[in-house]
Amino acid sequence: MERFVKKTVAGVAIAFAVFLGACKDEVTGSNTDAIVFPGANVSYSQHVQPLFQQACAVGGCHAGSTAQAGLNLSPPSYNNLMNHVPRLVTSGSSGNSLLVQRLEGTIQPRMPLNGSPLNSNQLTGVRKWIDEGALNN
Image 1 (spheres, rainbow, N blue to C red):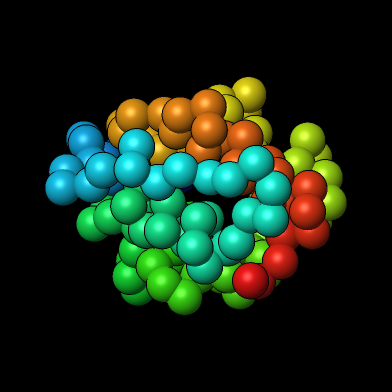
Image 2: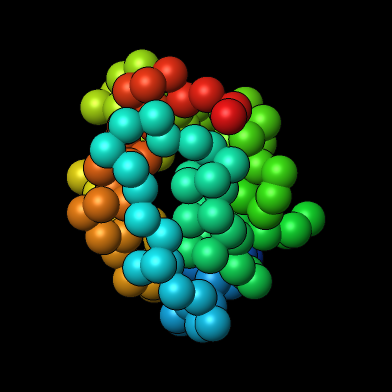
């Protein structure tokens, strides 16, 4: 029995290490700073989706059939984001949205994992999109 437990713990540890190592060390070929959010009327398709596509939907992270945590942010991603369990977005309340907490790093690990943090305009823009109702626009 003790041998079984040791093998099980070792297997879980290896699986966890593979899971954490699946994201690339850095996002390459993207220019997320070029994505600028307006002060109001934030559009998912024009602002949020392009940001997620460049910063999050990269190989080994939130893209394709092997997306980490089951969250595929490759276009079109709105339904994947809004229907994810646990809930990531609380429409109308960015302060209560796990998405914002992970992007800002108030809940670890900060996202994008191993990538540059989003800039203040982008964080404010994602918050504004959520506070404006998190519309699929």
